[in-house]
Every structure is written in C-alpha cells, then in structure tokens.
Image (cartoon, rainbow, N blue to C red):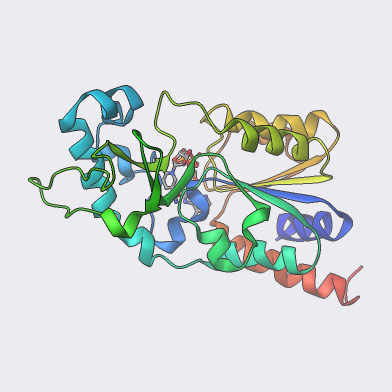
Length: 258
Ligand code: NAD
C-alpha cells in the first residue's frame, strides 16, 4: 500500500517525531472509544460526567464510579501493536514524545518512558481526593460495578474521591498543555493515531505543529477535520497499519529500500 510506504519514508526522514493518540489507538486492546457504535456514549449519559454534576449529585457520582468499575478491564488491558510501534520509534531515537488524550497507561506499559508521555486528560489508574488532594491508586478504592455500590470516599478526610482524569467542564493540566504546545511547535513530523480530532483544546495541538512547519500524518478509521492537511492519510486500524509501517521503517533503516 502506497500510504504505508509513504508514512515509513516520512518517519525515516524525520528526527523529532510526535505521536498524538486518542481512544482509537486502544480499541484493539479491547477498550472501547466514546463515539463509535457500541462506544461508551451509547451506554452512559455524557451529562453525568461533568465536574459540576460529579461534585453536586451523588447519583451522577455513583454512575461515574459504576462505569469506572465496569471498565476495571483498563487495568488488565495490554498494549497492542500500535502502542508497541510507537515504543519502537522511541527505541530508534526518533520519538520526541507522545501526546495522548488517553487515560489508560498503555503507552507506558508498551515501554515508552513516563517522561515522554504527556497525558492531557489524566490517568485512570489514580484517584484524587477533592478535599485534601491526596492521590492514591485506583485499585485501592475501586467499588463494585453493581447498581447499589456507593461512591468511595477519602480514607483520610472523607472527601469526595475522583478518578484523576479530566471531566467535562474541567480545565486541562496547564503545565502539560503548555509543554505539548511547545513541543508540537518544534517537531518535524506529527503523527495522529486513533483520534477523531473533535475534542478541544487537545485537537488544536496538531495545528500548532503544522503551523510551525511540521508534516502531518493521520492514521484513523474514520475521517477527521484535519484530513485535508495531512501529507499522508491512512484510514485503517491503528495496530495493523502501524505494524506494517514499522516493518517498512526497519527495511529502510537497514538500507534495503531507498
Ligand atoms: P473518539 O472516541 O472521539 O475517537 C476515536 C477515533 O478513533 C474515532 O475517529 C474512530 O474512528 C477511531 N478508531 C477507533 N478504533 C480505531 C482503530 N482500531 N484504529 C484507528 N482508528 C480507530 O476519541 P478521542 O478523539 O480520543 O476523544 C474522546 C475522549 O475520550 C478522549 O479525550 C479520551 O480522553 C477519552 N477516552 C479515552 C480512552 C482510553 O484511554 N483508552 C477510551 C475512551 C475515551
């Protein structure tokens, strides 16, 4: 496939690559995205996941924790070939960083060092107390997934516990967003993998890269608003596509292809 070759060529020509990922990079690990058929929004009301409702309404809080408990498989999910391909870019010395909207920890689990993963929406493996700000591991407090299960509270101050992820209505972590913007403006290749590019402000970041002269590649199952700006556009499954791309990258680096 010509696009696979074209992305492999872009990678071997680049020195500072940023990979920007969304829920689509993890669907092949068994974690559903939000908007696709069968995604999370077909089973839960997004209105329950605003910070305002979470703080003020115990029923919304219970619904959120029920969803978190159901997705206990986040802890069991394993990286797929797309995560491993990105980790390989790191080992090859080409990866500047991963900027991710995901909360699943799978880039780190695949071998990318934590310092190189900028998490825009937090990490579901941690919870934070809204009273005393104590952070603790999710697995220590995760309640059952049954309807009656109560939302957990802080063992120190009885405050409201919130998974350490960004809910609707919350601002993104300023330092991380600033760092992501700075790095985007310095990369030479920006690869989007598995994001609909519809959630802002994260979806602005690719435009900071292209605005500063980087080339843009997009690997996503469905069209995105930035497809027209991509030098290489591949509509396909992240794991399958990225495995093929890395095979071609290895051949190119070994000098078997020019
Ligand atoms: P999204 O749900 O809006 O879009 C995901 C995109 O990935 C879609 O365009 C879909 O067509 C595509 N996709 C699905 N499977 C794919 C595959 N195998 N290969 C390639 N593309 C695939 O997700 P988003 O843009 O990331 O934004 C929604 C928000 O949901 C994010 O901000 C994120 O915080 C959160 N989220 C995270 C996870 C996770 O951590 N794994 C899961 C669900 C939602």
